[in-house]
Structures are given as structure tokens and as C-alpha cells.
View 1 (cartoon, rainbow, N blue to C red):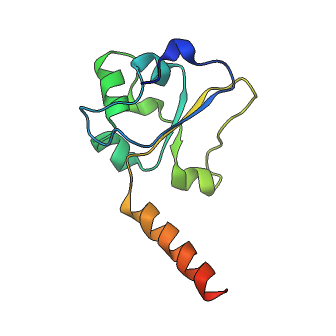
View 2: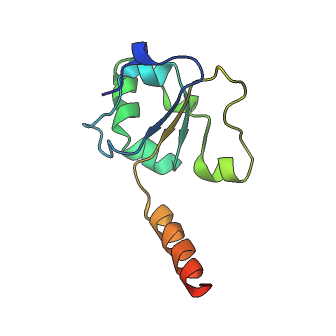
Length: 112
């Protein structure tokens, strides 16, 4: 469990578990002090326990999400703006990510 009091300026946090609302990997203070990016909006709104519990504690709201993985890769939103930003990527796992990884692996096997 990551606690907000441990987080220093410039930290990036990857949370890849807590795929149910009753699970969490960090406290609400961690979410509150982070610029939050998610793998998918639907996953964040439906399953991201860390975010939902932070909402229940009054530390966060879904409107505070800075963007999703697609927006980041298309450069529609940008991550860290300066060296002191605290950023968080919250993933609950999307089958599309698994498919993309499998395609990359398959294409690399074909080329070797």
C-alpha cells in the first residue's frame, strides 16, 4: 500500500492492480496529490478501486483525470509538465492492451 506521505515531488506511480472497487494499492492522499492518467475511461469509472475509494474519502473526482492512454499516445494530452509533477498511471487491465502486446510480439516473431 502506497501512502501519500511517502511521495516526493517528481515521483511517477504505476498502479496496475486494484481492478475492483473494493481493492486498492494506494491511499486517497496519493491519488489527491497526483496528476492521474488511466488506461481507459471506462475502466477507471467502472473498476478502479484506488480512484473509487479516493472519491468515497472526498479526495478525488473522476473529472480530475488528466487523460487516458489513447490520448497520451496521440499527444492529445501530455504527461509530466515539469520535474516536480507527481504523476500516476492507473490501469485496471483492458483486453485491448493485451491484444496490442500480442500483435507486437507476433510481428516481431515474423520478422526474425
